Length: 313
Image (tube, rainbow, N blue to C red; front, top):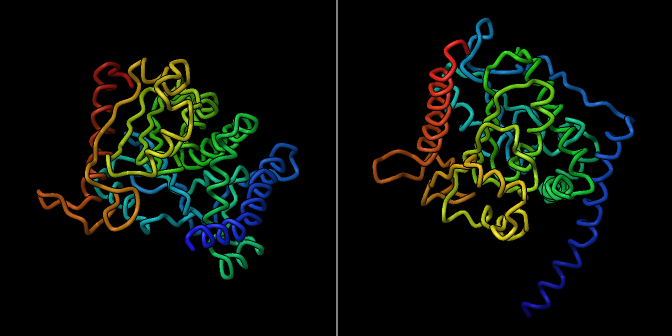
């Protein structure tokens, strides 16, 4: 009976997965041939950044790349609680949350007529679309083009938020789950365009480990032994295996560019997730509080260390 049910599910999802795979590649091809240019401008009621006063240089710019639930400029899996907590806890940062890491055209799914219909009738297709985009971004045939598209999108949004190339102000790419594929892939293009000090913080990061991190100052991996979704990526992608010593991920690890922070006993999703405002630690803090404090602590420590090395920065 179980085998029959599994077969029915696979037969039902097979055509959907095939369609999603084709659609994910189609958007990248549209970008590649120039049929449509990415539109960096946001709706009039959407700020390009929140937090620090735009009239003076912030300590750093933080760009948040959300997980596969990202469908519009404003939504996040937790209703924006993590981003808001960071803004409240670190008012010296300018924070951007509008980047679309699952769209080479920087185009949110919500607002497209076909996707709006699917959202109301076959909601799982929105989830599968962003999942397939991760695998397109990880595919070596499409990866360079996809990385360039996401990196250019982030650079555009940073400029519109007030970032000036060669300013020396750090840019932090904070990514959740599949957003890590876009964040690690954006490093080369982002550094080329802005020449900014780049720090990466992955939260339950799901990525293939093939993206070059040479131009990143450091990557902080926030993880948990209970995060089985992130653990799948370390099994699924050979570049994450320790055996492949010359992969981009292992070169970064060997160069001392990767630091692991344990957020046990948090899970990837659900009521015990990293960003849960209700799950509590023994000291009374929520999981969201601890994650926020960890992210802010990393940024402030690195900003202080950078200022000590280069007082003119």
